[in-house]
Length: 224
Image (cartoon, rainbow, N blue to C red):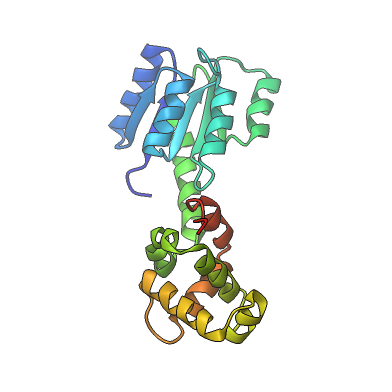
């Protein structure tokens, strides 16, 4: 992983600056926040790779920060390291049961901090290597899907199910000519060319299980 971004969420200014100085010295990019609320906002703005977060924070505590970030960053959650002055087994178990990646008890050494960070980087690198590359055809057409009419979206969904023009016409009680015209309009709006490009696009969209997500996020369908 090249140039990982690390977010420090710690209300104790001296400790926050000390951690940032150590991390920066070893070439990592660092941003920091003095509260849980600020940490959540910075996560949404900058999508850090690793978050180092104190458990005891003013306002929302570290466990609440962890829960909010996991909910808001579902596509690619950052690695999470808890910091705490408490060393009880129950505290440690709470954080790890929630899904935290590591837990450092204050005071910790520079070596412990760097070892934890490097372990998280190694794990993230392996995870991201295993993730499939984005389908460029689908990615290029995402924003254009919103230009389709209600009827065109319905037909695209039927094409994704593997149905032919006659089958779609029978299901929707329209002529084959009408379906063919819609297919031409869909291909034009999505900038698809070639005899099988629309079919390939629809099937790939369905295969990656993205169709439902896209349709849910589209603007309201026209009423006319």
